[in-house]
Length: 450
Image (cartoon, rainbow, N blue to C red; front, top):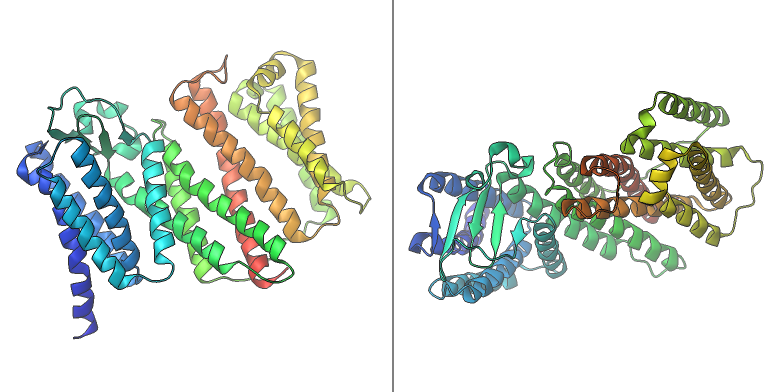
């Protein structure tokens, strides 16, 4: 049998498995609006066909069958709980087929990658509020409905990520999917899982550098998981700029995946003394313009000024003629200052009092200076690791702010929800690319040395 025919036969079980997922629609246990049928069929064929084609080309059918096995088992349980006993056996058959062909096609890393990918995918659905566990009053005791997202909201009230979305509602749960989330959520989940497994398995070491290797692996995995999971948080906000973080997340994860499969040596640019002076003067000039024009009263711009004050202190440390570094535990002091600068009460006070504002800037300057002096006379990999840790901390804090904002938790009393989102978006825009580049450099050092 030729290779092309063999590939086709290996794909047929996936087609059968996913076809069985449609049984509730065909039997009428989940009622679909007639106008949505062509859209639903086209989206399913295009999206699932795309994933199947990618799995065949990348020789990842084992992982695909494991993921469809988990999904089929979950759907079997949901149908049983919802009282749809007539269709539950079809999902059970789907699970059996998937597991059988997974055992035939599996490779050593498929179990870990497939399991982690499924777990992250479910987490993305929950974080984004795509999957909700709430009583749906319109559903009968053993019946579900599939309808357009626009049936319950106006087109202007639908987030960009859920455009042309479909809602499947049962008695106690509902799932909202759109072409964008149906493509990007599985893609982000898979890339996050694949990157994490590649980092853990490919960058372990039994050498004398095993401790530093473990740190590199931990930081790299944290970066990948932070970027991946963040996309689930931002997708649920109906703000025009935030959905594009899904594209950013997918892009960064894809670049990491390409690097892990084709690693190259990375080198950091050297900062000359004159460049440090120029940057320091430029930052001071930018701060003066922002404060003198009153733009600082915007929460997002205030966050930008706070970030500039930390960078100013960091650059100032280069000008201090000493090669002796501060003890590593002094970094905890910089972290403490940095955390306080996120405290909403202090932000409010800094915008109300010139004296508090000056103290705020000096605190940022001190935090940056401590970090800079802590970096002196240390290995490059240690410096880059600390930078990644700092920016990943900011990213996680921002993700928490965004997620709490969805539920209108008043953590920033005195500021509007839009102001908090703008503030968080700025921190994300700065932190994510720096954290990602630090991650790639750490992986390069682990693979090739400094």
